[in-house]
Structure formats: C-alpha cells, structure tokens
Image 1 (cartoon, one colour):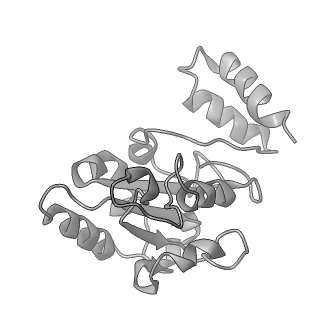
Image 2: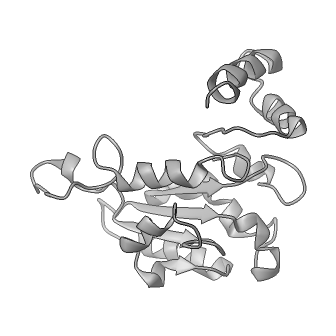
Amino acid sequence: FVGFRGSSKTTTLMNLIMRPYPFYGATDKVDKNDDRTKPVFDNIFIISPTIGLDSTSKPILKIVPPENIFTDYSDAMIDAILEYQKNQEPPREKTMIICDDILGMGGRGLSPSSKIYRLPAVLRHYDCSVAYLVQILRGNGALPPITRNNIEGWFLYKNPNMKEIGKMAEEFGSFGGSNNFLNLYKDAVMEKP
C-alpha cells in the first residue's frame, strides 16, 4: 500500500481484513462447512508505532489480541512468528503481518537490513502474508529493493508529489513503459474523487 498521508491505505486494509467474503474477514454466523464464513487469517500481527491512534485502524484492535501488537521492533519477533509457522503440521494456520508506519521506527530497532524487509522473499514457505503501508515507494527511509522486488501485489493511491509518482512510473514501468503507467495511474487514481 503506497500513498500519501490520508489517502485511505488503512481504510482499504481494514476493509479487506474485516469484511466478510469475498474479502478476508469472517461473517457473524460462521458455518464450519462453508469456508466463505471463516476469516482467511488465523493470526494477525501488527507492527506499528501508531496503530489505534486514528479511527480507521481501531476496528482491527477488536480482533487482534494485544500480545500480537508491537509498537517497537526486533528481529526476534519475526524469528518467533516464522518458527511458530515452521513447526506446525500441515495445513498450517494462515498468518498476516501488518507493517504500518514502520519506516518511522528507525530508532525503535528497525534498520534497512532488518528481517521484516526480507519477509516477502520467504513468506510463501510459511503460509504468511505481509502488508506494508508506506507513504513513499523509494528513497531514504523507504522499502529496500529486496522488499519491493518480492511483493506480489500493490495498492497505489493518490500522491501530490510528482517525484514520488515518477518513482512509481520507474518501478512499475514494465506495464508498457513509464508513460503507459502514468496514463493508467492518472486514470485510475488521480482523476477519482
């Protein structure tokens, strides 16, 4: 999820996780014979210094236990999650790791070489998913190349900074070239209310 502050990144993620089928959340009436009524993720972990500070992220606090919410970071927490997943018998529980506003956690145990940034390269082996909610795609304090190169899907939002949009066009220019990306971005993102 890449977008300027207030561009609805958190709202989109909350809708995906909290809403029932065809999204990832459960319905109020779970039918053990119908997978569409069960949540996709058995475990959700949140790494964020700001979770719950605004109204858009508060609903998820109702379904994520406090012991799965971290406002500081250490590689040990990633090691523990992956070790837990690795030691399960198949089928493993499905786990989601949400990383929101982590780029501002530099003084809280996070560095460009942190394991949290290598997750997209290994998660499929552990039945884990990760979502990064960031304001900038590339640059100082942004997601490192190993992360960006292994992410399978992107949500791109409005951004008033033309340099950032240019970085997106460079990064995603394989979709018919930079100009084609810019035209698609303008049509899909910038001209919408």
